[in-house]
Amino acid sequence: MKKLILLLTSCAMAFTLEAQKCLDINITSLMGNPDVPGAANASYKKCNTSKNDHNQITILDYGTDIVQLDTLINKTTRNFNTAYMAGVTGVNVQMPSQQDVAGAKDLAEQLKSMTPEQQKEWAAQMAQQKMKNPGAGTMQDDASTAKLVYQTQDVAVNQMRAVNDEFSNKLAAIDDAAAKEIQTITREDKSKCPQGITGLPACDCSNEIEGKYWKQIIVIKDNYNNQKTALLQNYLPKIKALAGSVDNTVTKLKNGDAIKSPDLKRMLFSSQSSAFANAFLITTKCIEDVRKDGADAYTNKMNCDNKVYDLSCSSK
Image (cartoon, rainbow, N blue to C red; front, side, top):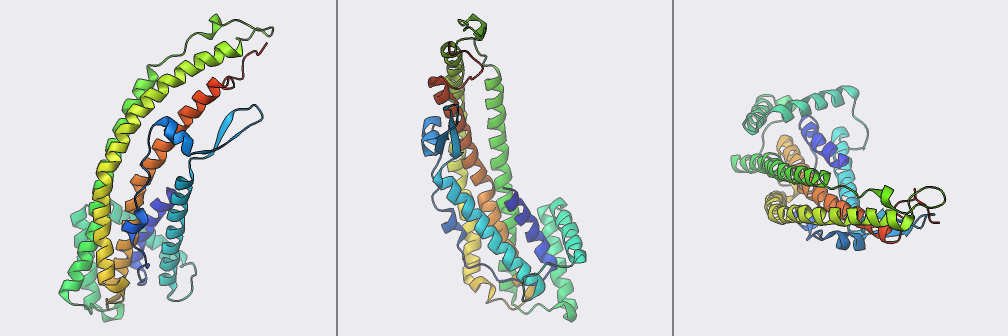
């Protein structure tokens, strides 16, 4: 997810550099219809697993679909960064100067601290300055095109971020509630188990106690993960609708080829890259967190059933 956050920062940096053409992608199509996470046992069955030297089940990855999703995000992010760097240099993909990078980072921080209205006012001021300064490029497009690009930037950055913030806050509240309930669960006293010749509790008894604990944890995880899944199903259409609006503008303006002004072309690229990042940022985190929480808990329960979860016990 760090790469998506870096991408969001680079979107703001793009305002200060050269124009880029949008990628030939459709964000809504890339989002597809993700496999909504289910109960812990279903999440476990999606995983690729193996066994270690102690015969414990270990998770190699949380499912082919999760791996493919991460690959899609990483690949598309690299494509955006490549296009961004090509725009920096004009032709070749090379690193910008340290002065350019430092200035762009400062601007990114400045934009992050602005309210949506302040961001729109700043963008309008930048456009006016460009129009007054021929050396920096003039506004060559009609008012309707400029308005469409500004509206798209607002959708990609402000509106999508607002939905993500709301979604993220509700997910965090569910996590907090789950953590508090899990804290109330205690394990039985293993000292009551029969002891082996080593003086340690017998493995059958010890792992049975651990198994009872993880069964309770799975019930809690399933309850709260179901709430997360319901939130995902509620917010996913909203995020797709906003991303679709950006897709439509990019298509209408022929990936930027229909725009003459470098500033507007750059802004459309920034909008597309921001929309991509915002489309996957919280939705992917939700899917992966639910899958991981459920699969991890169920794996622990399986190892308890196989008498290999607790290794600090006596088998004799």
